[in-house]
Image 1 (cartoon, rainbow, N blue to C red):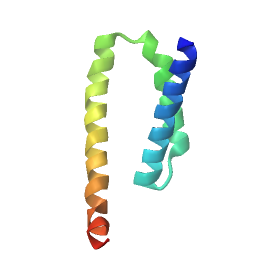
Image 2 (image 1 turned 90 degrees about the vertical axis):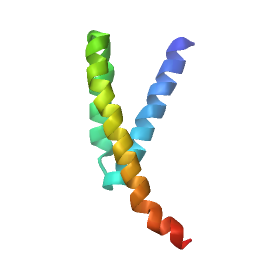
Image 3 (image 1 turned 120 degrees about the horizontal axis):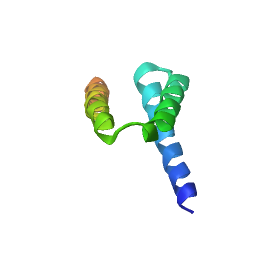
Length: 80
């Protein structure tokens, strides 16, 4: 049961990453899938402190990209 929930969660985040890449860059779903797979495989082998040193800037980058998309779409939203 726990394995199925874990797999469902990973698939959800993979689809969300691919949707984000398609929205921001007009493609890149395969690249997101490759990076995601590498992270899932390499994650358990890494030290948690090392993961946090990578995760914090990665989350900040995702937040900046998300805000950029919101700001880029804001003029279209105002016209509606």
